[in-house]
Image 1 (cartoon, rainbow, N blue to C red):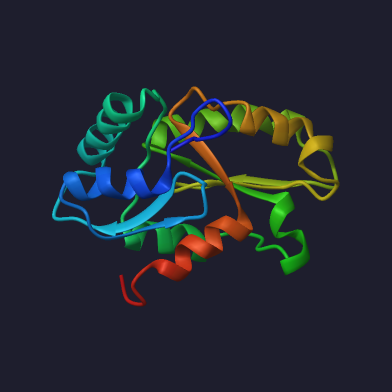
Image 2 (tube, rainbow, N blue to C red; image 1 turned 30 degrees about the vertical axis):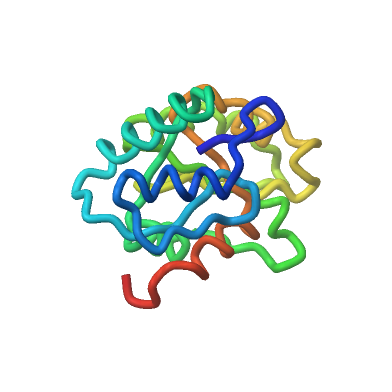
Length: 170
């Protein structure tokens, strides 16, 4: 989910909220709004709706929530068309959406991508490498600026931290 200065959600309380929905082995990543947990839920979309509702009711925060299975998340990491060097992890964004149609809307960012940047939209995620930094990238600004839509972005360093919490054989 998207959190930030205007969408504060204490991670300890977020873990408890996920547990109240049947989440097991709940772990959060920093204060980033990311959590890894086990669930018997079979519908990622339905689970995302439930998490969004509990976040709204408990914390007064209305924000898009996107749920990915461990196998889908692993596919997103492995499917990165141009993984960055470690020193560029903070300049590399991965965009997640709840569905393929929403993800496809990110193609409209392509005209903003400069020659030294790299951008790709796949069936599971979109990837943007802002070699000059996110603040200097019109494409990066456009991608991050979609916070009110059912799209969320994470830098490659955070994506790798989440992936490290997943089961080794999802």
